[in-house]
Length: 265
Length: 256
Image (cartoon, rainbow over all chains, first blue to last red; front, side, top):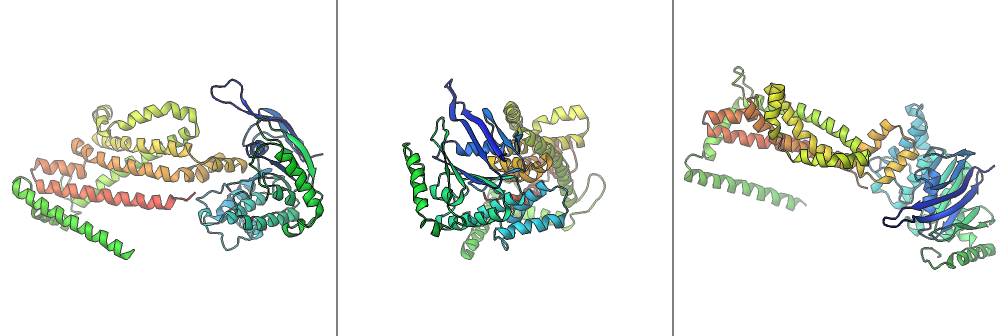
């Protein structure tokens, strides 16, 4: 049985002055298995972040259902942690405080030393030891997202939802953090659902890529299994002939539509 | 950095000298206006023993200032508490906020002194009335700012607290109040300013012991040097209080 099941989900936005609401995407269905890394790849504006927010429970669908562990999702919950594109760290808290607030929320019955040990474990996991007392505003984009990842992992959710997590990080740091994410994914065996518009990132990280057509009325049109051997790295993956085959297949699908919101390096 | 620091201090002192010199000149033209020297003598007299206590109507300027500050604190704390609680509720409920906001704007435009006759007539007690005037002066700017600050907290912060399922009470104290903190403190600062401005006429008119009472009393004694001295003290205490809020604002500031 699938861990995450999205069933016929549609999203409309009302437009002022127009009777017919704007349909972002229609009848989207997908499955994510336990331990899998699945990405939705699509043009900017196809509603993939909205889809992620609906799964997270911080946005609502106009039609359809989302199930996690066969239970219908109503509202947000600690079983689904989001890593945001713009980090969404609380700026008045330190690095330590941002992770501690999550650990305390997940384990209200723990005492101080339990919480401290747990927070420190995840700070160390993302390589931020020494930066505990820094405020987010003093960190680089890469370090901010490390805090975002530590916060999400520290709660040990059933599924991790990544909303274009590396889009605001400079290209050199991006590769390093992508590999760290894979390492943490392997170490924890967590299930990951990611939305992105970066073709290479999706191939590097995913077991499966779902291709979304551009909006309005976007739909998931195609599924691509990425059976490149793991561990993958940015430097070796490009030597695999299958890599270009997959990449071309994806680019061909996406460039059938006249949109330029896609990164193909 | 150092040289710019020094230059503003020099300029500031120069302005003070110009001010005192002009005051001296004006007082030589307007014979009724006491000049700086007699005021300085009066100041020396009052400040040499600021905490004397010769019965209910004759107390040192320090004691009178403490009376005013005490009254200000009680009214301000009560008013701010009410304002912040209501502000958070309004800020979290857009419909309620929109419905109530016009009334806040009307109430905020009314001088707290304008309430005084009505309050005095209703509660029949001058001390309680003075407190209520300070309360009235304290509520509106903080209420308006809190509601605005809370309703404008970045959606991401609210999303994070929703995803983490933070308990509603913790959410208020750990996310909403810190998020709106700088805006709330800006409101508190305006409130404090307006309360301090209101307390002087309130004390003067109600005869409640304090700096405002002192001003009025000395006017009745036709002791203009004392009136001017009191004006200076009121200004200085106001600045000191504002510095507290400045420090608080710095503590709560955050960079997004």
